[in-house]
Amino acid sequence: MSNTELLNSDPFEAASTAADYIASETGVETHDVALILGSGWGGAADLIGETTATLTASEVPGFSAPAVEGHVGTIRSVLTKDGKRALVLGARTHYYEGKGVRAVVHGVRTAAAAGCRTLVITNGCGGLNEQWQPGTPVLISDHINLTGTSPLEGATFVDLTDLYSPRIRSLAKEVDPSLDEGVYVQFHGPHYETPAEVQYAKRIGADLVGMSTALEAIAARHAGLEVFGISLVTNLAAGISPTPLSHQEVIEAGLAAGARISRLLADIIARL
Image (cartoon, rainbow, N blue to C red; front, side, top):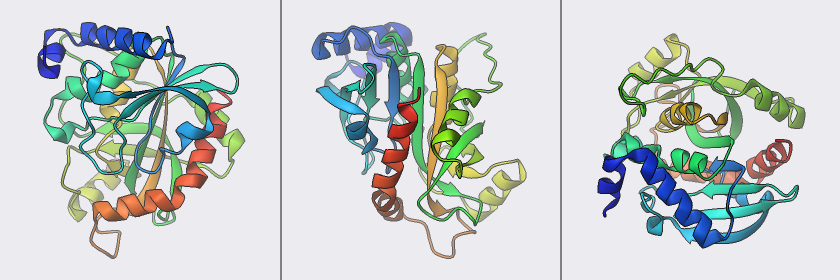
């Protein structure tokens, strides 16, 4: 059965199938925390503990190889220093890839089926605050979903109040009191936002703009996971930045900040 057929049959059965495969291949029956590591954040996986198993994501039911430069195509099981199990999802599917919203949130649902109770979501994004220069980490306090879709289907009503855990944000500020918070907007992509769209986002309360995270967070709340989100400002958004935007700029900013933000994230995870 193809990934599309698997996800279209029943997305929750697909997640259970993937979780069973991960348990079998890693030898770990259940995991505690899942991490989606976006641009610049990949080094955290090496700092939180010992990787005991690495799977090729495209071999796990429902998962595909990443389509974006800067993302790895693996799923790792990590034994943290305090004895917890972390599931590191390196193969993120973006909504703009056209595979459907079920594919976008398959990793989140798989993490829940694998026993995870906490989800850490990271990303690289554009910043609307000129004080946040490239390389600045910002806690996500809330989001605005401008994709025009939802991972929830039918009469599935889920409260999104305090979607991004106040408890974990407080822990993060204990690690680094200088951390700011902001509202993240997910646009559809893959094109970058126009200056007018950036100004629109700013007027409706946004501080950060990108092409991921919101749909994943909604699915995580539905699955009962506690969600922690943190962005890396890789560039000032269109119309605020004095130069044209490019994906290469995103990658370079992530590389420059990678060691520092990975250490930060590892220290936060150690407190969960």
